[in-house]
Image (cartoon, rainbow, N blue to C red; front, side):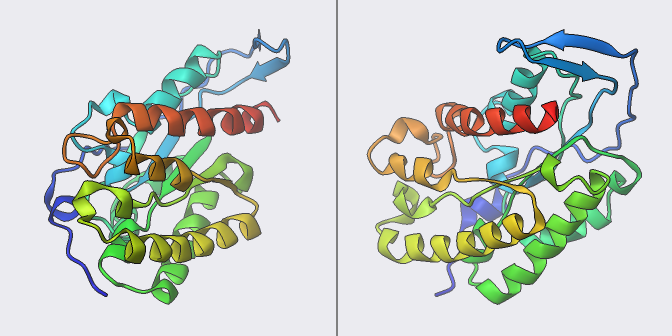
Length: 242
Protein backbone atom coordinates (compact mmCIF):
# COMPACT_ATOMS: atom_id res chain seq x y z
CA UNK A 1 0.00 0.00 0.00
CA UNK A 2 1.35 3.40 -0.96
CA UNK A 3 1.90 5.75 1.97
CA UNK A 4 2.77 9.48 1.93
CA UNK A 5 5.18 10.68 4.60
CA UNK A 6 5.11 14.47 5.00
CA UNK A 7 7.96 14.52 7.48
CA UNK A 8 10.27 12.40 5.37
CA UNK A 9 9.47 14.39 2.25
CA UNK A 10 9.12 17.99 3.34
CA UNK A 11 11.75 18.62 6.00
CA UNK A 12 14.86 20.40 4.79
CA UNK A 13 18.00 18.27 4.62
CA UNK A 14 21.52 18.98 5.70
CA UNK A 15 23.74 18.44 2.70
CA UNK A 16 27.23 19.18 1.49
CA UNK A 17 27.66 18.08 -2.10
CA UNK A 18 30.61 20.26 -3.00
CA UNK A 19 33.83 18.78 -4.24
CA UNK A 20 36.71 18.62 -1.79
CA UNK A 21 40.33 18.26 -2.81
CA UNK A 22 42.44 15.33 -1.71
CA UNK A 23 45.25 16.38 0.62
CA UNK A 24 48.40 14.24 0.63
CA UNK A 25 50.56 14.68 3.74
CA UNK A 26 53.87 13.03 4.42
CA UNK A 27 53.77 9.32 5.20
CA UNK A 28 53.33 8.68 8.90
CA UNK A 29 53.17 5.54 11.01
CA UNK A 30 50.83 5.40 13.98
CA UNK A 31 49.82 2.84 16.56
CA UNK A 32 46.25 2.14 17.62
CA UNK A 33 45.20 0.92 21.04
CA UNK A 34 45.60 -2.70 19.90
CA UNK A 35 49.27 -1.93 18.97
CA UNK A 36 48.66 -2.69 15.29
CA UNK A 37 50.84 -0.46 13.12
CA UNK A 38 49.12 1.47 10.35
CA UNK A 39 50.97 3.39 7.65
CA UNK A 40 48.90 6.28 6.39
CA UNK A 41 50.05 8.05 3.24
CA UNK A 42 46.87 9.84 2.22
CA UNK A 43 44.20 11.94 3.79
CA UNK A 44 40.98 10.18 2.84
CA UNK A 45 37.81 11.71 1.48
CA UNK A 46 34.55 10.41 2.94
CA UNK A 47 31.28 10.34 0.97
CA UNK A 48 27.99 9.78 2.84
CA UNK A 49 25.04 8.86 0.62
CA UNK A 50 21.43 8.60 1.71
CA UNK A 51 18.25 10.31 2.80
CA UNK A 52 17.02 11.83 6.07
CA UNK A 53 18.65 9.09 8.13
CA UNK A 54 22.04 10.23 6.84
CA UNK A 55 21.35 13.97 6.75
CA UNK A 56 19.71 14.03 10.18
CA UNK A 57 16.44 15.67 11.20
CA UNK A 58 16.04 17.62 14.43
CA UNK A 59 19.55 16.71 15.60
CA UNK A 60 22.81 18.60 15.37
CA UNK A 61 24.69 17.84 12.15
CA UNK A 62 27.70 16.63 14.12
CA UNK A 63 25.51 14.17 16.03
CA UNK A 64 24.62 12.21 12.87
CA UNK A 65 26.45 8.97 12.14
CA UNK A 66 28.68 10.30 9.31
CA UNK A 67 30.14 13.00 11.53
CA UNK A 68 30.38 10.76 14.59
CA UNK A 69 32.21 8.18 12.49
CA UNK A 70 34.55 10.81 11.07
CA UNK A 71 35.37 12.06 14.57
CA UNK A 72 36.16 8.60 15.92
CA UNK A 73 38.34 7.66 12.95
CA UNK A 74 40.39 10.83 13.29
CA UNK A 75 40.76 10.15 17.01
CA UNK A 76 42.21 6.77 16.03
CA UNK A 77 44.86 8.57 13.92
CA UNK A 78 43.27 8.03 10.53
CA UNK A 79 43.27 11.17 8.40
CA UNK A 80 39.65 11.56 7.27
CA UNK A 81 38.24 14.79 5.89
CA UNK A 82 34.76 15.95 7.01
CA UNK A 83 32.02 14.01 5.20
CA UNK A 84 30.80 15.12 1.82
CA UNK A 85 27.08 14.40 2.08
CA UNK A 86 24.65 13.75 -0.72
CA UNK A 87 21.55 13.16 1.35
CA UNK A 88 18.18 14.82 1.91
CA UNK A 89 14.93 13.94 3.64
CA UNK A 90 12.39 12.32 1.36
CA UNK A 91 14.91 11.03 -1.16
CA UNK A 92 14.32 7.73 -2.91
CA UNK A 93 16.97 5.79 -4.78
CA UNK A 94 15.94 7.69 -7.91
CA UNK A 95 16.43 11.04 -6.19
CA UNK A 96 19.85 9.99 -4.96
CA UNK A 97 20.90 8.87 -8.43
CA UNK A 98 19.85 12.23 -9.88
CA UNK A 99 21.68 14.14 -7.16
CA UNK A 100 24.87 12.15 -7.65
CA UNK A 101 24.70 12.67 -11.41
CA UNK A 102 24.38 16.41 -10.85
CA UNK A 103 27.27 16.66 -8.41
CA UNK A 104 31.03 16.89 -8.82
CA UNK A 105 31.82 13.72 -6.86
CA UNK A 106 32.86 11.83 -9.98
CA UNK A 107 36.01 13.97 -10.00
CA UNK A 108 37.02 12.85 -6.50
CA UNK A 109 38.39 9.56 -5.21
CA UNK A 110 36.97 8.50 -1.86
CA UNK A 111 38.62 6.38 0.79
CA UNK A 112 35.29 5.67 2.47
CA UNK A 113 31.71 5.64 1.20
CA UNK A 114 28.69 4.94 3.41
CA UNK A 115 25.25 4.30 1.98
CA UNK A 116 21.80 4.08 3.56
CA UNK A 117 18.87 4.40 1.17
CA UNK A 118 15.46 2.85 0.63
CA UNK A 119 13.02 3.92 3.32
CA UNK A 120 11.24 6.34 1.01
CA UNK A 121 11.10 3.77 -1.79
CA UNK A 122 9.24 1.53 0.66
CA UNK A 123 7.06 4.29 2.08
CA UNK A 124 6.00 5.56 -1.35
CA UNK A 125 5.19 2.08 -2.58
CA UNK A 126 7.75 2.11 -5.40
CA UNK A 127 8.26 -1.63 -5.24
CA UNK A 128 11.11 -4.00 -4.53
CA UNK A 129 11.93 -4.68 -8.20
CA UNK A 130 12.48 -0.99 -8.93
CA UNK A 131 14.52 -0.65 -5.75
CA UNK A 132 16.70 -3.60 -6.68
CA UNK A 133 17.78 -2.02 -9.98
CA UNK A 134 18.40 1.45 -8.58
CA UNK A 135 20.15 0.31 -5.43
CA UNK A 136 22.51 -1.82 -7.53
CA UNK A 137 23.27 1.22 -9.70
CA UNK A 138 24.05 3.39 -6.68
CA UNK A 139 26.24 0.74 -5.09
CA UNK A 140 28.17 0.21 -8.31
CA UNK A 141 28.78 3.97 -8.55
CA UNK A 142 29.91 4.06 -4.92
CA UNK A 143 32.42 1.28 -5.54
CA UNK A 144 33.75 3.07 -8.62
CA UNK A 145 34.22 6.22 -6.54
CA UNK A 146 36.60 4.31 -4.26
CA UNK A 147 38.66 3.26 -7.24
CA UNK A 148 37.04 -0.16 -7.29
CA UNK A 149 37.66 -0.94 -3.61
CA UNK A 150 34.34 -2.53 -2.64
CA UNK A 151 35.78 -3.20 0.82
CA UNK A 152 35.77 0.56 1.45
CA UNK A 153 32.02 0.84 0.84
CA UNK A 154 29.74 0.41 3.84
CA UNK A 155 26.00 -0.13 3.45
CA UNK A 156 23.71 0.40 6.43
CA UNK A 157 20.36 -1.39 6.44
CA UNK A 158 17.06 0.50 6.35
CA UNK A 159 15.68 1.30 9.83
CA UNK A 160 12.15 0.15 10.68
CA UNK A 161 10.10 3.33 11.02
CA UNK A 162 7.02 1.17 11.64
CA UNK A 163 7.83 0.96 15.35
CA UNK A 164 7.81 4.75 15.79
CA UNK A 165 4.83 6.77 17.05
CA UNK A 166 4.78 8.50 13.67
CA UNK A 167 3.70 5.25 12.02
CA UNK A 168 0.47 5.25 14.06
CA UNK A 169 0.27 1.53 14.68
CA UNK A 170 1.24 0.31 11.19
CA UNK A 171 4.13 -1.75 12.53
CA UNK A 172 2.73 -5.10 11.35
CA UNK A 173 2.51 -3.78 7.78
CA UNK A 174 5.66 -1.66 7.59
CA UNK A 175 8.07 -4.02 9.34
CA UNK A 176 7.76 -6.92 6.85
CA UNK A 177 8.12 -4.49 3.95
CA UNK A 178 11.30 -3.06 5.43
CA UNK A 179 12.62 -6.61 5.77
CA UNK A 180 11.97 -7.28 2.07
CA UNK A 181 13.86 -4.16 1.04
CA UNK A 182 16.72 -5.07 3.37
CA UNK A 183 16.89 -8.57 1.91
CA UNK A 184 17.50 -6.90 -1.44
CA UNK A 185 20.17 -4.42 -0.38
CA UNK A 186 21.98 -7.01 1.73
CA UNK A 187 22.12 -9.53 -1.10
CA UNK A 188 23.39 -6.99 -3.63
CA UNK A 189 25.93 -5.57 -1.17
CA UNK A 190 27.46 -8.90 -0.26
CA UNK A 191 27.55 -10.09 -3.87
CA UNK A 192 29.51 -6.95 -4.74
CA UNK A 193 32.03 -7.57 -1.97
CA UNK A 194 31.03 -4.46 -0.01
CA UNK A 195 30.28 -4.31 3.72
CA UNK A 196 26.83 -4.58 5.30
CA UNK A 197 25.81 -3.32 8.73
CA UNK A 198 22.46 -4.25 10.26
CA UNK A 199 21.02 -1.24 12.13
CA UNK A 200 17.41 -2.34 11.66
CA UNK A 201 17.40 -4.43 14.83
CA UNK A 202 18.63 -1.44 16.83
CA UNK A 203 16.02 0.82 15.25
CA UNK A 204 13.30 -1.53 16.51
CA UNK A 205 14.35 -0.85 20.09
CA UNK A 206 12.60 2.51 19.65
CA UNK A 207 9.31 0.64 20.13
CA UNK A 208 10.02 0.69 23.87
CA UNK A 209 12.73 3.36 24.16
CA UNK A 210 11.65 6.72 22.77
CA UNK A 211 14.99 8.30 23.74
CA UNK A 212 16.29 6.69 20.55
CA UNK A 213 14.09 9.04 18.53
CA UNK A 214 14.31 12.74 17.71
CA UNK A 215 11.55 15.07 18.81
CA UNK A 216 9.56 14.37 15.64
CA UNK A 217 8.99 10.80 16.92
CA UNK A 218 10.33 9.38 13.67
CA UNK A 219 14.01 10.10 13.00
CA UNK A 220 17.00 8.94 15.07
CA UNK A 221 18.21 10.86 18.09
CA UNK A 222 21.88 11.36 18.89
CA UNK A 223 21.64 8.27 21.09
CA UNK A 224 20.50 6.13 18.17
CA UNK A 225 23.20 7.55 15.90
CA UNK A 226 25.85 6.75 18.50
CA UNK A 227 24.76 3.10 18.55
CA UNK A 228 24.86 2.91 14.76
CA UNK A 229 28.32 4.44 14.77
CA UNK A 230 29.52 1.93 17.36
CA UNK A 231 28.42 -0.86 15.01
CA UNK A 232 29.97 0.77 11.96
CA UNK A 233 33.32 2.01 13.28
CA UNK A 234 35.07 -1.33 14.03
CA UNK A 235 34.31 -2.58 10.54
CA UNK A 236 35.56 0.62 8.91
CA UNK A 237 38.69 0.63 11.07
CA UNK A 238 39.44 -2.97 10.18
CA UNK A 239 39.11 -2.35 6.45
CA UNK A 240 41.28 0.78 6.56
CA UNK A 241 44.06 -1.19 8.24
CA UNK A 242 44.24 -3.59 5.30
